[in-house]
Image (tube, rainbow, N blue to C red):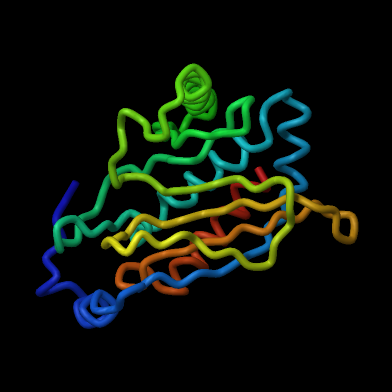
Length: 205
């Protein structure tokens, strides 16, 4: 973790402006073509969710602004961003996970399965590790949405929020809408666009 000197930061005025808002988050819902990612998952007998979530985290980790967080009023940047997603149990309750990011897909699958096992064998809502160097996310594979709103705690927050919708066939292609909510003091539309470009690139591999 590295502290950013906001006095000399090029985002100083933007940061100060949006930091004064009660809710500085803005959100977008973006359609992604997941045809190749879905085919890859099925061909290799792996979870479609794990495939696209790994691609999402890879895309997050190449956009510097998505690695910024606000800690006690100071802007910090993390070297690596991990995944914190809800994982549903058989009884339809869920727990929050903390999945260590690994560029290697097999390593990431191992980390995911360990968290899934932990959640399925406990009734804890929160993970043992619950730090800010992550994204918060949920999969909502039962519905395809064109808009989504995240709960707001009222406390200062800077972690990006993602929600993944149901993938549906449109003109022969499998399309999945993804909502992204980010703190505007740290992230602009340009950076969401960079994420979007990289996410689609990884989904196509």
